[in-house]
Length: 370
Image (cartoon, rainbow, N blue to C red; front, top):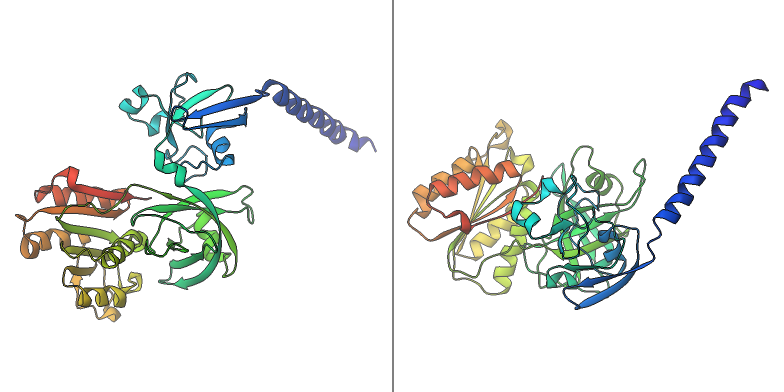
């Protein structure tokens, strides 16, 4: 039995230390009740101190954007903290500009509430809520993109086209904690009881793997939203929209919203890039919209068409196609606005093409995702 003495001793010591740490944490981090004053008294919430601001606000039904679910890796949960809570943390500074830091903007997921504090958040966030949605349908659009439609039941969502929601992925397999990820809504704003998302499988991605391999019709899933300020402007400028893959989502919503709202006073050119035909989807729907609406022009392009694709459309990088169309078909002298949805690299490349063709950078709007 002597061989058991060492492991039993280690186990006992570990148990005592764990209990001691838990006891110390409970005593040291017992900050009691704290008041959070939001927007100079618009709302005052009482919480138990000791947790992070982002989490405590969510327990009161106040949701800040957070694509990473509070792990400090997305920089989305910004808010102005007017109470002194100490200097900015190294985990915050990569996500904040000098102006934001000077204005006391903080990441709510990094600020632990230890006493009463006052914050400022955009008023529209008061309308954000968590929905207990039911998966109504799941459709394969390509080999790696699924269209997922959620039914909100008796609840309804009010949003403008271009906004996004965060899906709440429960623990599964080796993923122990809940995870949140943000996806643009592709549904029509008029449809208040459903939310449609386009979700591309990211190898190793916690949320996308769950959706592609585990989620089934009839399942329940939490949705938090709406968030975001990507939207169609109210000008009459010609819209140049560029996307690839699941970047289709906000533009599908914007197009249907324009049709539903009878907005026909401005041309829309939609450039959709893909490598080969197997990456294309919604082609029939976009072609039908183009046929029915003279102001809408759809330009799909393949950068690496395969022989069996028998592709007769535009070829090349979508940035090169965009450049050609601005110069040859649309006209650089026209009043143009840019709308981009895709990776930072794609957005930077499109920004260069557009600004080189005379579009002011302040008239280029984008929805960036990794």
